[in-house]
Image (tube, rainbow, N blue to C red):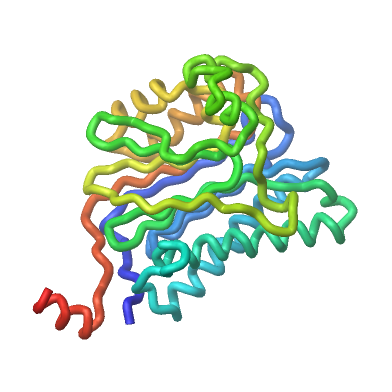
Length: 278
């Protein structure tokens, strides 16, 4: 049975979340488990404190379900129908379950009516990263000196870019960019966008809420990582400081991880024997 391999000593990771300069409380939530290589960030929305309820449910549910599945399930193989690896299916199903819980809570708890949350998650397994997201919280990757966004926002603005109404450069300067077209908790089911990509030694992965990307341009995020890359804690704090210096109009959350060593999956005896004849 192919179980997870501990990623301790193979990655560096840090996360920070900040209320910002304008909001009264923080509706973002973050969590990570470097043992299994799971990172989850959610940006809640809703009246009163409902946004932080939604983001809290999302992060806690996803973390718990993935941990439980990794402890007992065989992680080898690929689902023929979807083409996804077993860990990717585990992550997708955990997010779908979180959506159901948030939606049910919003329908049964009056103070939580209308709440929802975006989510972006990264799961490192077998020298790959599984990327799952709903909404406009993002993941970026810095490889060598190339910095790029690896998720596409589920937002009205992104749809307008896709249809040619704005260039990506013009979209960065649009003031009202927060209308999301997909979020957890809004409907009984949700379409989770999920992809798998190889990761290389030295890669940086950045998960962030729009409280960072609305305040800090991609080029400045890139420069900050490159400048302070020896200390991820400093990178995260500098990014939050930049967002606050530029207005801090929303809660700011950022998570960073760097791959320091390869992490191939542990293979069972049958896999190893077949490998000798491959």
